[in-house]
Length: 367
Image (tube, rainbow, N blue to C red; front, side, top):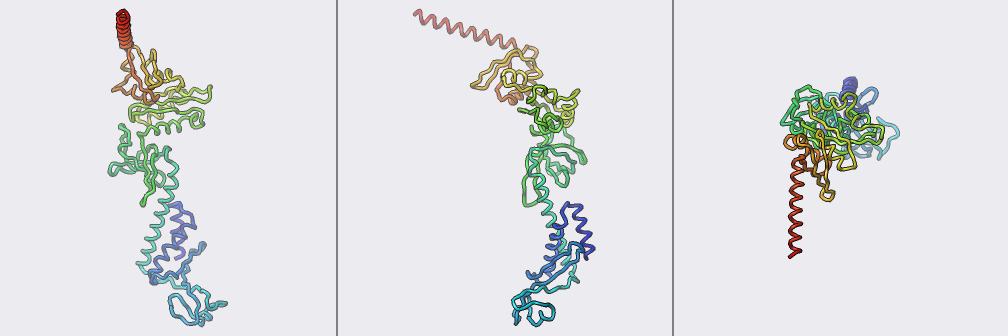
């Protein structure tokens, strides 16, 4: 049996990534479970596997007594003198047991316990591997779609990609290689639950970390992000090094870096905005691609009125208000966009109102 155990151990080590000592310990646990059932579930039965030859040694521990009252746990001193040296009353001895004729049921029990223990270790290994990967990007292969979830094979783990976390343009099929953002890792009584997303704003941040060395090195930072998954993303970036253009670093030579990210996002548009501590400048840039004429801000209420040329109004607001909505989320300010004409009309209206109030006060004073 030693040869078979050695082959099985090497197979488990190779396929499951479990070290030799751990596999031997598992084998001992599995075999002792089966042997104890064969011998009446005695707790005094022990088993050891030789780590070199993989030979199995089974023995029963018994206490040496003068008169045996419990044969399952005691042995007489007379019998001990025949088999052991230097053993006396009160000592314990190891009585070898035969491992022949385990029986089909005993072997099946051993296998069941062994593979159950291996699954438990695999689950633990996967959890330990992924528990610190929340907030990172993984790459894997689509295995299947089941009950509204896609399953991605990453190493030996299956990562869940819920359908609601898939981009509208994604047409995922079995065998596809994709990237996703891990947002949850949870230990359960069964397999660890690892969930990923392609719609999370931090997925885009993670992709920029992968593509832009200046971000990896901590020179360029992403200050904030606003995203409509599958449609448009705005990110605000700044550089700690005055010599490094943060926007240029993210775009890359001839746009290679940002284009790689856009391809991964299936054509999602990305606006890269230079962050500025001057909020008026930051708000104006956040409304890219529209050209802004002026910005008026109310710091107390964190609101801003932005004026653009008439032909830039629809561009500034965006389809269904997307551009101004994302700009508001990116900056953290409530932004109201006006065309030049609207702004002029508003100023005239305010002037008329001011004039009316002035005339009213003058009339009251004369009275």
